[in-house]
Length: 375
Image (cartoon, rainbow, N blue to C red; front, side, top):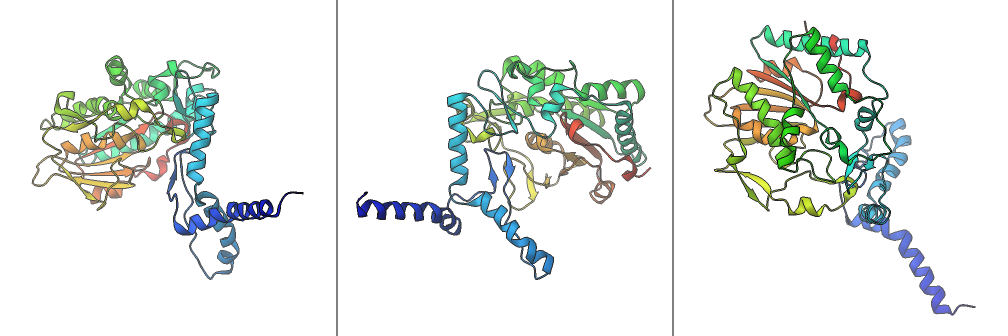
């Protein structure tokens, strides 16, 4: 029979184990708003309402919140991800694909579907996209506002050699290729594919980090340059930035805020970020305390006293690394994290130009609504 002090210690250990997550939650230990390992935003504390339905739903909502925020949860998930990746070379999340040569790829949001291409665009789907883009162009053209539609490349489009051999592609192209070919054959809308520029720069620099979802600052700079060059055709005062306009600094991040699975990428940590020589001419006026990685639903920059054009940019997460460079060329620019075109914003902001950026995988994850666009 075990001695009494052993039983007491066992009880204390058990009580500590079941109480620690809740006590830690109350104390704010390991507090976070996102889960790096799971690549998602954590549940928010549920609002209270005296409505009967809200009261009945509140316990389940709180359980979801608790499951996401109990003490040391993120730390435990990081330990799990690190063990599985470095020990077994496997991903701990369904949203992350383990590639070759110590590379990870984002599997969610249409990324892997677009890579495999088991379901290419149908003719009807392409017609919907064409109608939406042409209606947007025509509405802006009627108001003398140039329109640029930009396609940003996914990581697996630029570094397919690091994708796992177990993923067999059904076609050699992507939905972006289908869309571009369809539009070039049937439309005169200005479509800018950034892949040629990014692929051309691939031998000279690492443009996406191994564990990041998006391109890094060097990839963003390369992707930005064709956009600036196209804008310069409409606005000659725009002078595209080059690599010579930047210094390197280890104090500036070169990639995403978070890494897939929450892993530490030694190569990313060692790579200094790019710093604009002489500083940026613009300032962020909204929000007051902006996220340094551009993860804002609405972000506004201005250059005081500038006569440069005003712009509205509809964008997704890939534009986070484009925004610092593009803001150099506008007296006032509004970045909206949304795929849908909003004419009311364009009118309210008195835009001189509209840019609509979409990452290639969103041709799988999103379909436009042409009927919502005035014509």
